[in-house]
Amino acid sequence: MMSLAERVLAGDSRAIARAISLIENEDPQAAALVRTIFGKTGRAYVIGVTGQPGAGKSTLVDRMTAEIRGRGHSVGVLTVDPSSPFSGGAVLGDRLRMQGHAADEGVFIRSMATRGHLGGLARATGDAALVLDAAGKDIIVIETVGVGQDEVDIIKTADVSILTLVPGTGDDVQALKAGIMEIADIFVVNKADREGADRLVSSIESNLTLQTYGPDQWRPLILKTIATNGTGVTELVDAIWKFRSHSEATQSARRQERSAFRLRELVAKRFMDHLELGVLRPGELEAMVERVAAREIDPYTAADELLALGLTRAEGL
Ligand SMILES: Nc1nc2c(ncn2[C@@H]2O[C@H](COP(=O)(O)OP(=O)(O)OP(=O)(O)O)[C@@H](O)[C@H]2O)c(=O)[nH]1
Ligand SMILES: [Mg+2]
Image (cartoon, rainbow, N blue to C red; front, side, top):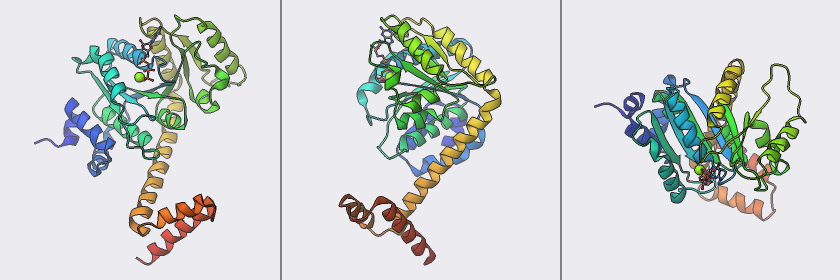
């Protein structure tokens, strides 16, 4: 019988789905699986799509998937919603919208849920992308809702970042957090059939003029789309391809940054797990939390004390 890893590597959709479930559940088998397949990853190109709820991301991703399939590449789609764990409604909606690809073996679509661990979703998404990569998907699209830190962390795992904005929704550029403006390689003004699309394009444009770009540096592109009828989608995929060839030289640096981020994050999580499960006695962490909440101790001193406890008790092993 073939192992789960072997079936993933063979591109078996049911095995991919099973592997992603293990990752979501933080099952110990998931870490073992990632260890086994990791050497076979690094081939896929990862596209990150983010934007406010309802911006039309899923509709756009659906159209992009069709366009990319038409160019002969296989596609894996991960839909992530950090704000609503196990959001059955959104999942169902996405399934319905994406059902046009249901019969296509070259497309795998999956919504990711979280059990609400800090940073857990970014890690789970990164691991799920590795599974799709190992399974031979050429292009991986990660859709994430919102423009906060979680989304920035998730989008950081992408090779190209697309920020979707919508005219007339108070989506004005000033209101956007600097962090998310800075990570966008391509801006998409979706729902361009609505009034104010050109105004939004100009305001993004004038925001870009505040930055200086070196001669070899990528200057973010701004595109208009109407996802519902596919207008502008070919141009969007062209822009992604253009970014990809432009950034070939810098891509390894970006991937290095991504590896560093994942490693730090994993060590921090492992260390915290070790402290909580292996070093601290039951109730000790909670007691410290209460002292911080009661202002008896500041969080820095509390963290130092917990770390010191971890070290002294580890020495005693
Ligand atoms: N008028 C217009 N409506 C659009 C366009 N693109 C998407 N919509 C509609 O906007 C609504 C939300 O679309 P979704 O694709 O679900 O948006 P989303 O960003 O994935 O939403 P969440 O994942 O829930 O954040 C749907 O009713 C779409 O039909 C567009 O270009 N023009
Ligand atoms: Mg969506």
